[in-house]
Amino acid sequence: MNKAELAAVISDKCGVTKKQAEDMLECLTSTVTNTIKNGGEVTLTGFGTFSARVRKGREGVNPQNPSQSITIPPTKVVKFKAGKTLKDALKASQQTAAPAPEPETASEPVEESSDEGGSAEL
Image (cartoon, rainbow, N blue to C red; front, side, top):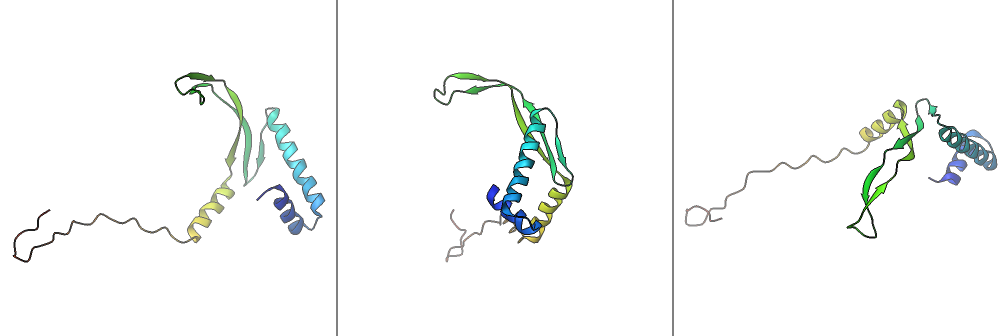
């Protein structure tokens, strides 16, 4: 689902115009972005928490020259931690979906006997 599709769903469910729904989404995304950029976090109870964290620097491989090592500097990244309600909803959808097939167990090898009553050759 993309932003336009989400705006259409919000418009239908909340009884607002698509333009108003798009404006609400734009306001939400800009508020979350600015809050995280300024070091804060946004918690939507039951849904999750958006925050920023610093990913430490590390050594990597130059994709253009795999024999060359490069240093990847520390960088800020967005972190999302799913809330309990969201996790429970996903677990419930897994349980209502068709159960996964049971893994086949290894059966004992079947020995074939020869017509002469001797043991089978492997």
